[in-house]
Image (cartoon, rainbow, N blue to C red; front, side, top):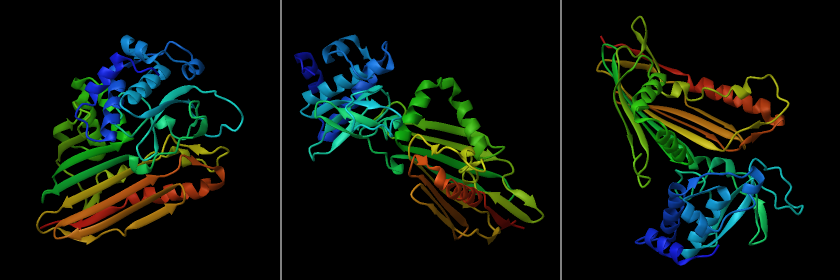
Length: 374
């Protein structure tokens, strides 16, 4: 990891005006992700073991994981940080590293911060902001040959892989409705969503969002939509849409039955708990969280017959779920939060976890009953 004059000049230009160590690292991290193409012509094992000199990767403009990891460490070194390439075995949380071995199938980087904390970074991606990195690296065993250390990369907190959704729905006396929808992905999820949209053709954006909105608001007509922050990683990514629905609630006589938009399907999926019993543990890619904040504005004369009871569920140490309801004036507010905190559910706790998921699904599918306005 030799800092040449070319590398030093480039790094000085990249971090010019940066006010904090974190901002300097972030700028270099993004630059390597975006400017050096990830191209591998080696096998998995050799990619995690060997790499080209940083200057060569910089000149080529491409490299595999080891090339990009070495270049990132070299550029961080030029910015005044201690940084080491580390060898991983991705998907190897059970690997016994106490036996002498430098085996691996991936190479990333870690950088020492002023407070002594080592922060892991993976420059093989395209869309990650500091301090986030690929989900697949979390829980993997690593070897730092320079500092002669072995260890396990900690799992992310659920809040570092979070989707925050907001729905504001206005219901009219004739049963029609208009709604504003907003999704704000945080941390690792923002990187994933940004990569998804960058991969899509712009002409398909409308089709994708329309299909998404129809899963939240059945029979909805999309009025307009937007994807903010996509053009700059300095901005927070935000997906939003405005929709209209000709007939939103189900009707039984003079009663409106309202499925809570978004929340009703928030716990869909989880086919992994459909079995009566399991022989093997359930494994997820990484911890995650999702929050819904829904506001329903009722028309004059409509009367709430009763709100569902709030629910708080916990399946420690694996997951938790909560949903609350409140009413103020003619507005109903629903808040739901789900957190998956561990990536493995062992067979001994399968039934307990299955019962938790079923209960959470049932809670998310509760409906609100409204007396129609006259």
